[in-house]
Length: 519
Image 1 (cartoon, rainbow, N blue to C red):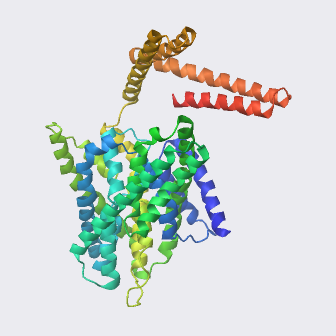
Image 2: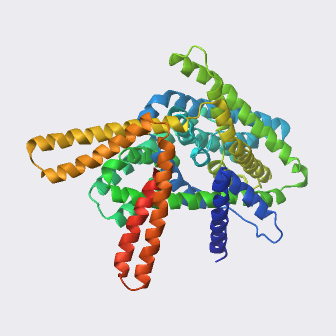
Image 3: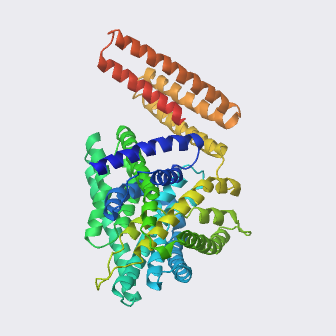
C-alpha cells in the first residue's frame, strides 16, 4: 500500500507541476526533477528506492514506443548516415572520455570509471523526446536528435556489459566478443521488433473494436521488449523498431475514431509515466548521497567535471560531422548553429539511471563493490544537471540559433496543403458529377463545403489579417459553445431531455471545441 500511495502522490505532484510548466512555458521534465529534489529535501519525506526492473519493464517500453512512432521513414532515410556515426562513434568516444576523466579526478578505479563512461555515453530517448516536443526545430534536425537517442542503445549496452564484466569479474575485455555481442543485440532486437510489428499489423487489420485496438497498442511495446530480453537481445532496439514500423502504418491500420482514441489513451499513459519517472530522479538523489562514504563528499565537483566532458566531447564530435553533412548538401559555409543545438539537445535521463541501478552489489568473489554508490550518485547527478541546465535553456538556445521554424512558415505550409486537399476533393466531385452517380443536391452540398475550405485556405495564404480574424472567430465560437453547453445542462436539469441525448449533444460540442483548439 505504501508503494501505491507513493505513486499516487507522484501523479498528483506531476499534475500540479505540469500545470505550472505549461503556464510558465518551461519544460515539464526539468521542473519535475526540481520538484522531486525539493520534496526529497523536506523533513519526513520517506526514502525512495528505485528498482531497475520497474524502470526497465514498466516505464521504458511505452515511452520508447511512443517516441519511435513519431519517427518518419522518409526523414529517417535522409539522416541514417549521421545517425549511424553518432550512435556508434560518439558513444564510444564519450565513454572513453568520461572513463578517462573519472579515473583522473574521482576516487573511482579505472574499471568503475569505465562503467560510468558506458552508462552515460548515450543520450536518452525519453528525455530528448520530452524536452523537444515543444520546440519548432526543422524536421531533419529534430529527426537527427531523436533517432540518435533511439538507436544508440545497442552500442552503450554492449559497452556497459563489457565494462561491468571487467569491474565485477576482473576479466580482460574481449573486443572481438564485444563486436559479436553488438551484432546479436542490435540485429536480434531489430529482427524481433520487426516480427512483432508484422504480427500486430495482421491482428489490427482484422480488428475494428476500439477497446481491443487500445489493448493491443498498449501491449505491443511490452511484448516487443519482453520477447527481445528473453532472447538475450536488445529490448530497447526491439521496441524502437516495432514503433517505427507500426507508426508509419498507423493511418492504414485503423479508422479515424480509433486513432483519436489511441492518441488520447497514449497521451495519458505517456504523461503519467514521464511524470513519475522524472519525479523519481529528483527524489532519489538525496538518499543516494546519504549512502556515500566520507571520502566521496566532493561528488558535486566530480559530477560537473563529467557533465562538462560529455558536452565538450559531443560538440567536438558533432561540429565536424555537421560541416561534412552541410557541404554534401551544397552549403559552402557551414552553419555553427546546428552543431550547437545538437550538442545542447543531448540530454541524459531514464536509461542511464536504470543501467546504474543494475550494477551488481558484489563482485564474483563475493566482495562488495564499494564504488557502486559513487557511480550511482554521479549518474543521477549528471542526469539532473543535463535535465535542469540544458532543459531550462534549450528553448533559448534554439531561439537564439535562428534555426527554429517560424509559426508563419508552418501556417503557410498547412494552408497550402489544405488547398491541395480541397482541390483533390473538388476534382473527384466533378468526376462523380459527369458520371451522374450521385444526386445533384448531395454534390452541391459537398461542393459548397469544399469551396468554403478552399477559400479559407487561400485567405490564409493571401491575407495577413486572416490569422487575427480567425482568432476572433474561434474565440466567439467558443463563447457560443459555452452558451450552448449551459443551455444543454438546463434542459437536462429540467428533465426535458434524457441523459443519453445530453451525452450525445455534449460530445458533439466537445468535438467542435477540440477542432477549434487544434486549428
